[in-house]
Amino acid sequence: AESLPHATLTVAVAAVLCAALGAYRVGDRSLWMDEAFSWSTADRSWGDLFHLIRGAEANGALYSLFLKPWIGLDEAEGWMRLPSVLFMAATVPLVYLIGRRLLDQRDAVLAAVLFAVNGSVIMFAQQVRGYALVSLLAALSWWCFVTDITDTRRTSNRPAWWWAILSVALAYGHVVATLIPVAQLVSLVWVDRPVERLRPRELVHRCTDHVQRRADRLPVRFVTDHQQVLTG
Image 1 (cartoon, rainbow, N blue to C red):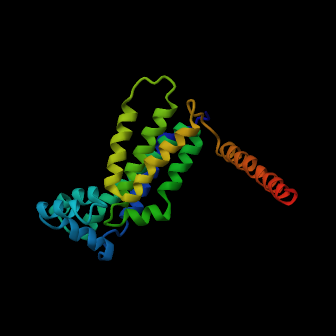
Image 2: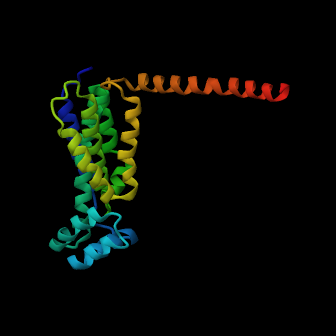
Image 3: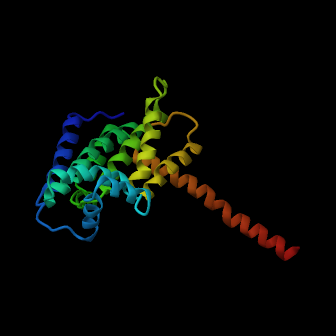
């Protein structure tokens, strides 16, 4: 794999930049409707919160349980949005680690930097919503997953165990996030050996070839079936 000098420093700077962009004027705006809902969910007694989670509002329960003690310290807009800033910034090095497992170092650094300055990432880093927490959990899940399937020595089962725990956490983070472990398990159908590190161009080329081979068969089969109907 290609080695890039100062890769760790570059990723660290990218994480700090992500935090700085997320923290910029983070407390200037009042809470909008969805943020107010997150606040109102967490701003109730523990008994009422657990009753709500067990009933109509199980989606996003993990974030509500985190936000409850957090807003007990302060309810200023900037303070309530601060965890999302930190969650997104913490996701940056995980993007690098995932990329390092699957690609080479240069591409992994590029992925982390692009994630850190992505407009949608910064937007969700400035909201009192659970999306930043889910992003962090999803990145942790993918890191554990790719670590397990790329470990040629199988020296430890800890990544698999952590993956299982994170899969449960994702379900309590957001209902849509349950699709992440499903996609990971489905991908195992095509993984019959430790995954190689691929250049993005090579990866796209392999996927394109696979789709092309499948697509090439369709017209032939259609014409053959059509001829059989006409002559039958």
